[in-house]
Amino acid sequence: MQDVRHQPRVSVIIPAYDSAAYIPDAIGSVLGQTYQDFEIIVVDDGSRDGTRELVESRYPEAQFIRIEHGGAARARNVGIRNAGGEFVAFLDADDVWLPRKLEKQMTHFDRDPDVAMIFTENNYYDDRGVIDYSHKFDKRVLMRGCVPANILLYSYVTTPTVIVRKKVFDDVGFFDEGLTIAEDDNLWIRISSKYKIHLIEEILVSVRRNHGSLTSDIVAVIRGVEKNIELLRDKYKCFDESMQPIINKKYSILHNNMGYYHFTRNDFRTARIEYAKSIRLDPGNMNSYRYLFLSFFPTALIDAGKRCKRKFSR
Image (cartoon, rainbow, N blue to C red):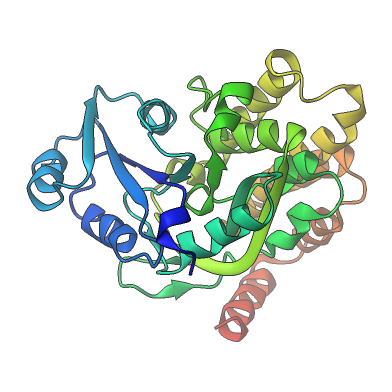
């Protein structure tokens, strides 16, 4: 571990909305870090469940800021503006860091002064503490080739894994508060379009899987991605006409996901419409061809296939 006399300070931003049930675990995971030069800033986004009383009584070392409810992007921006550290780290109130998370990222920042942002691998867990492996994604894909295009295509720069040099925000701006979906991707794309970023290929964060989250609404996701692309192209000037094939491929992935949503609910007619849209946008999307073909099988045979898949994926 680095000599504490030379450690730069990290501002840890924790947006919280009705998070009293989970935030002790989040703050506890920060306090338990092997790297100890940090400040904790909890931005209470208009909670109604006693989050404020809990944090102020149990964690007097944390700076507490209460704002009217305005969403995660606004809460994080308030945190950044109040940050006193040279680096800004993000942690959601229902997620936790592994003990060496800050240490490993700050060690790499020290080794490479050109790196503006570092993120890590993460896993997912449920309310019982069971690790969920069904959403595993190899983030090394994001670092191959054009990083901004990869982030647009695949996302998976998970916000609680990210640390950014604070001075970068003076250049690229903050989270876009006009977005409720993809506001994090929007910022990471803007940063990676101008600066070097780095992936630590190690799981250093556990993210709580919330099955009732907004991102489970695939229609809302598509609309959010459309708005994000429009902003990146017109407002932030990150994308030009050369990015259109990548944008088409992104929409193809989203329509494939919507097709699968309907496929799993045996709405094969709607699924076929979505798979056809996916293929038109990206004729190389083999997954859409596969499920389009399967959607013509008898329902009983498809259901048997689903049962087999669940059995062998355990």
